[in-house]
Image 1 (cartoon, rainbow, N blue to C red):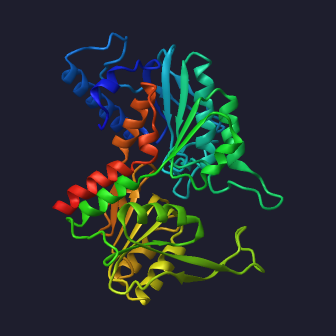
Image 2: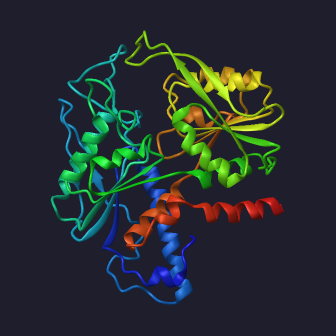
Image 3: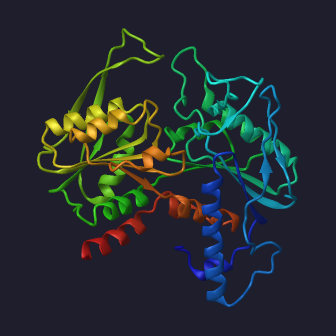
Length: 399
């Protein structure tokens, strides 16, 4: 991990590190814990010293917690070991619909117990339960929520609920000190709270992932590559990529039918492109999430019509709410070449087998952030990793 030995040993941890994995996050939390164990072992060996702090070096930093449910579907959280004085990090995935529970002895069509999938609301309720179970014993609580709960409901434009701000305020009122998220849909939602809020971007990991997946068969230059924003909201992300990679930038804007409302939204009529000629160039489309995929596939179709060479998609979160079949079809038609999303939310086994998909591992990045906060150091280098990206690109260009 890219931290100097002197800086690492000159800071005292806030408390004994503890990681609580909410349901569905067990694998990610274990990978994060293992990365921290490896990091601390390396620094201990390099310095030939040992920090005299009880519990600093352990076999695992995972704190055991259970989330049983009553027959009615009501739940509770039980922490099964002491957390007094701990610096707790709670990792949660509010979008893991693979986690289920039973209620009222309901049966499915085959007479088997009906498994009710947990909704984002259920996951958030469990998060509040485990915070409540801490009962003031932990020294500090940080919530690691890679995809922000209700992040798309970040502003109020009519008589509608302001869910994201209310959720953050609930966490603040329950005693949470910091909230760590990845690529927040609109980071300005942090203005609703007074506690720490950090939205980190997977820019560095995405750049490394595309180079690795293509066996270095991509050149980052204005003549060969172009960044594309699928809508106005993604411009900030694309501007950053374009600047650090030194490539050109283009964007689409969505024409909507404001006279019609479908599922609470005005439907998109078409995507209009603004930018330089993409003919013969590799293009990278960047967005924070893929939901149903309709907009993304339409953007790829229009880029192909503009004679783009290869089309790659960077998306922090791949929800694929309408299934994978439409992406399979679009891939077969040659509308895109590869989709990159992170592994911080649930990925179906079927998704991981697709030739067009690449999973970007974020466990080391999260481990570095957690270990840095536990040592009470600044996370600014992770919020803007431009130096790290530049160093990587120098090595990449030499290859």
